[in-house]
Length: 497
Image (cartoon, rainbow, N blue to C red; front, side, top):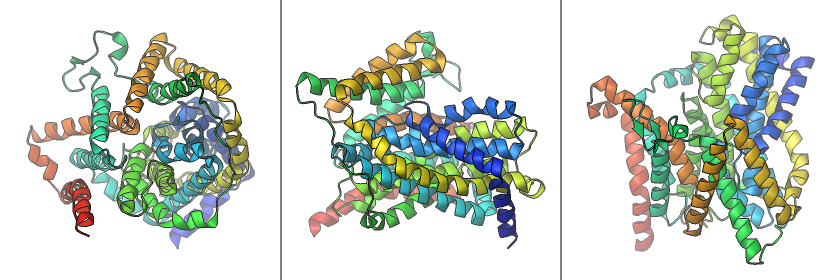
């Protein structure tokens, strides 16, 4: 009952006229930011943070605005992923696998509507779990050390092996390419330069956004140009902007499982939506084996899973920030900085000493997610009209957006050249039948895996036994082993039948 009283206090803060207006503005701006390739929630929140501070908003109002931008951008990231095959941010990479094939089949409106509904239920489910289990899950997050994160990353990589159906070898090669890209730069342990070819721009590693935009957007432009040269460039059918009740019923358990997966991974500090969506997609791919599996070809389950997990992770990452003062993702690290700017110390006492901030933020997320659903569903018709643009016009628009977005990051023309090189490389991979998602996820997860493996071995003095030093590590190790052997066992059983 005490929790419900605090939540009621939070709604009284969130529904104040100014805060309500701010959460609506944040959601709308966040959706626009998320829909632009390469910008994503991190940059959106970072851009608006100085503005929120300069406007002199109270701490709770500033946080409500920035949080609205955060999960608005998570919603918006699906638009370019589904319609253009260009993920708005890392968390939307998995959405391209089935969302874009649906758009190509004339089901862009259906895909956008389904992703909006899945995102809504994923977020709302995660928020309910925050209200119910905040203290318990904050204790769980504290127990995750470097060894646990090593196994979590290994489990995520194992799940990737099922992402592209019958081509696990190509998926593994894609992951290895991503891992190789993750090793470029200064070795964090020794300070030695690795694979930089004496190019100063590589000393800090390869920029994630340059890789994502190059491999997805530029390669997509090359695919469109190839179609134009062959004179078989066709306008993508727009289709209807609808979602049927049968679609919702078909994915209800998918959304529930993916919400739980995304939330639990989002609670773990330093993980984020990209890992949650990858694990959720791989999990659903395993559940679908032998049951009309169309993953990668426009399966609604393959779209609903990463979207629910993506937004559940975004909500879940708020929990360690508020209860422990540990950011659960890059975006919540910026929100943590916003708290510190307002002289607010996050931690267990925040909920007791300043409930209007903690619970006001949580309540505003309930309001914001409802507003996003109401806001986005009517706009689907407008978004999907992007598909009616002639591809001869669409190609230069995509190129312009990508070049402007990448150049605005560092103002360095080298990034533009490197982006084009990566785009050509990705185009060759696509022609050879490789999926690009494992490459990007290998880059994202590889850096986290290396950091935690180094940390674990430093703690143990080089003893690899630290990777099996507790119930969580053993549980994750067993889950990884099961994920590795399960496909072979299922194939044997299928042949036996």
